[in-house]
Image 1 (tube, helix red, strand yellow):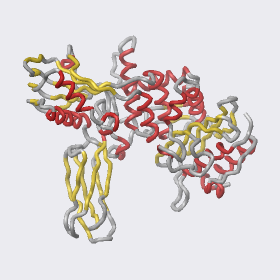
Image 2 (image 1 turned 60 degrees about the vertical axis):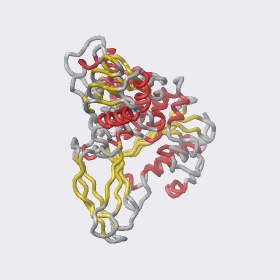
Image 3 (image 1 turned 120 degrees about the horizontal axis):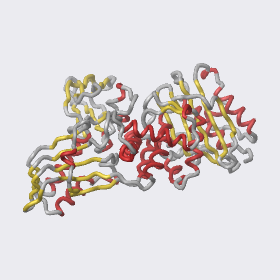
Image 4 (image 1 turned 180 degrees about the vertical axis):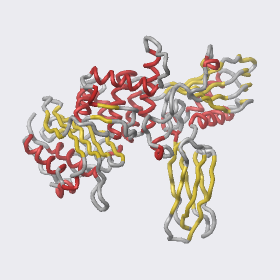
Amino acid sequence: MPAAAATGAIPAASTPAGLSAQIDALIGQPRFATASWGIAVASLDSGRMLYTHRADKLLQPASTAKLFTAALSLASLGPDYHMSTRLLSRGRVHNGRLDGHLVLYGMGDPTLGTDSSADWAAQLASQLAARGIRRVHGDLIADDSYFSGSPFGTGWEADDLQSWFAVPSSALSVDENIVDVTVSPGASAGQPASLTLAPVNGIPKLFGQITTTLPRASSDINLYRAPGSDSLYVFGTVPAQSSPAHFRLAMTDPALQAGRQLRQALASRGILISGTVRVLHWPQDDSALLAHADTLGEVLSPPLLDILKRGLKRSQNLYLQNLLLSVGVHEQAAAVSADPTFTDTESYAIRALRRLLTQIGIAPDASRFAEGTGLSRRDLVTPDAILHLLGYLAGQPYATQLREALPLAGVDGTLVHRMRDSAAAGNVQAKTGSMTYVHSLAGYVTAASGQRLAFAIMLNNYEAAPGKPPASSDLDAIAIALANYKGGK
């Protein structure tokens, strides 16, 4: 079986016992002796469980946790929900001059600056110009205090926070809060390499130098930014005549970058700001700025289902964490009585998630979620709970759209290179999950018999030895076995 799995040539089982034997052989290999597997497979047509292995045990889900955030955001906000980004001011307009501060107010849209919202700043500038405003006698204030609490999810590791996959979850996000860093060698050995950042001020302070070495030497590029710091330290070497190296790092202050982009767009429309661009972050108080403020411009995000598709296909943490926090804001606003103690936005959302899971029949002890992406090691869930969630989602009015938002094996998203040339290709629609020592896959597949299956496959405490196939190949082998299954409904 392991050799067949490696080539995708897994024979078709025709009975549950045969399928169980295939999966048992895969997960029973000696190299998994100290690892922890958890698997649950069921028919959506009959409700029958086809396979379980330690399905009631809590395991780290990695990014399959995003399925729970998707379910929560759809249940709480609805598939057609749009996030708003607004221009606000309390100032009076006289002879084309706005006397007062202009506030760029973010409400969680993670798509500003991406394909569908690339012209967001130009849209707001045009709306302001349409009101006849040509000057702003005041500051441009970029306000991202709509979310209260840390910009990082509970339990995110400090070592991850400079990386593109752990960007701050700002209510005023732009360009997915990522800075592209390009390192190009100098003309000859001994000269400093050049570093360019896009956007230029995405990380404000740059220290150190990377030195060009002889051609064909090994590259040793090091980039370091301490958690919470706005300083990037660079050191190491890059060989002459080598191609530019590209890196993606977390932006230090997305709201400030959004404010700068808007100021530039305003200037291009002939609207001048007399003051500076400044930011307002939680826990700073914006009530005085927003009280009785008029809305002078607004751009809306794509509908929530589209945001989910972008976030689930690429496993984009910013999108799912911002959706979780948006639920938290609505939960807090809808609270019957105010809690006298401070509760951050993320905690309100997690309360809502627990309530939803109870409503759909998932026991409280079957999950432990701290944030919305699966990046936290504090997130725990059983395969049974994931399977139950998949069954719930399959019965919702948006089931088809959500299923299409998942990566499709061999076709797109995080499964684009996986399960090709097998019965799973173009068939398995599933959320991947991967962190150090954590590997998971959960979603849907249509078996060879036409039976619709839901599955959750989780592997913890394992990393493949050097030279061995990656753990994902073993998860894929199980999914292929499900796709090949010829058993009856």
